[in-house]
Image 1 (cartoon, helix red, strand yellow):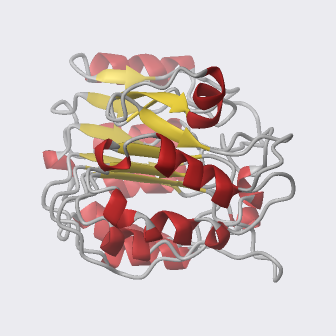
Image 2 (cartoon, helix red, strand yellow):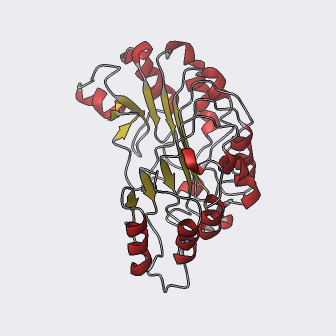
Image 3 (cartoon, one colour):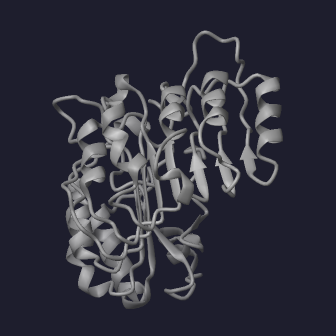
Length: 316
């Protein structure tokens, strides 16, 4: 997965940019698309005006998926300027099932510059939400607002992904403390310490046990320089036998991590093992294919295993 292009599909629906579609006079049915609401560089209107036009133009009560693009026209601004507008319209969006906060490419704003805010109110405002994606966390600078989350319980959420070049420990711990009885898919782009990823291996324990995630079938612990150590924990993690999908991609995954997986508990029950962007030798790649013949193993994006400087896919 990359962040150099806007998403074209979300929650099983094609994405339509509302601003462009409205200008062209080609608006699809409200429930036939995931609506992207975002500003462009040359937009004279602000986000509040664009959001109100969206609510007044489509049938918001039929909208099932929203993709939030840039809420700022030029320099990054906090999501706290735009999120309250969306939350205030929750009663007009009773069918909303999916929300993507921050579909912003690196050309528009580096992922570490995206200024988020406390997203906890989203869960209360949309009790029927099934999918949530959050991109960005902000570096630990005094003049930037950081991503926030308090432990919550949500009955309907099925898919949750945090995309970040450095996921703060308090976010990882908050997710681990949440009650998501229906959650089937969880993906965390853990990132690096230089961009705020100060989590520890101990912080991953709730996801590896799966005790508070009874419906979980896909787990992604990705984008880390410590991917080998994570793999060693996964190799004996209680949650693994009930997974159908496992993502250890986007990080500094080497033969050491692959050997830990192969020497650990069986993985032949998996449907998908995502290891893209890795530092595996060709021999180890073949060992994985041979050991997991019925598993779709993604070994794309191979980097030089002899490179002493091993980088993650997404950081700045």
